[in-house]
Figure 1 (cartoon, helix red, strand yellow):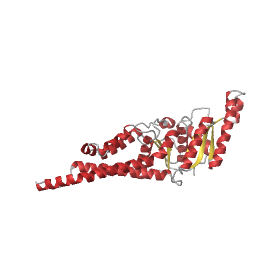
Figure 2 (cartoon, helix red, strand yellow):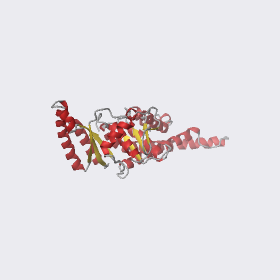
Figure 3 (cartoon, helix red, strand yellow):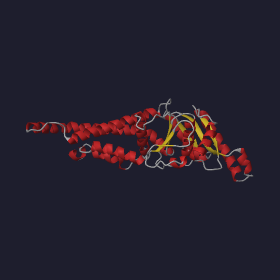
Figure 4 (cartoon, helix red, strand yellow):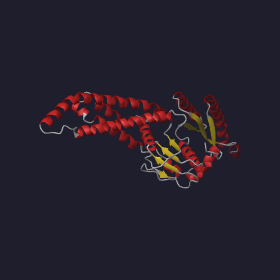
Length: 333
């Protein structure tokens, strides 16, 4: 959803509800501007997975993925495949140009690379534990929409880079082979050089990353495994942006079954306003609620309404209260 609608708090409340319903849960932030640790009242700096204390039921773990670190790792993979080729070919095959493409990372790619890394860790059990639920707190709508288009882009990018690397290797193999034969004739062992071995490892690592990207793409489109939950508030701008996101997700074939509408003023709060600010705000919210309800009916989406709390929602006790309001005490599904 739009920035400032309560995505992080909603994600955290959902995670607490899932864990206390008996599901081992991992809560992940891929937003470059992390605030998950603040919402949970847990220290999450450094990118390490941390257990959230105060949860009754199953376990809840959280992590703020260091997106810059993940992108740097990807750059190193690309640079490793390009190394050597650019120097030997004087740029003729364009390997260095491919590596330079990621000097300035397009918005959304950082989140995607971080998410792909998370999928790899979770599927290989490298986190050291099994999770029944993985909840991802994403960046605002613009990042999310771009994230949906980038798996194919990066897959094609890697495919092209590997093809160019293969062409270069084929072109240079004649000279390398001749050199190896001459070296063997003069007492060498004819084995691949250290540089060739390093290149082979770099290519293998990039192929592995490509497989991660393909796994992520498949996972995002698997409606039995993944669904997006749109978070919004009852304002015209937020509802309009949520509509764009919902229609874009629908066009991509990605499951959306629920939208969370935060900060609703109830009748009691409106009456306490004595015709002032809260009363006027409540009347404005009614129109937005109707607009969202019409959209949800067209797209077969369930709306979960969350009231405006009169205090800051954070740490397990506050998040538990919000989760109860969201699910009426039932988050077992």
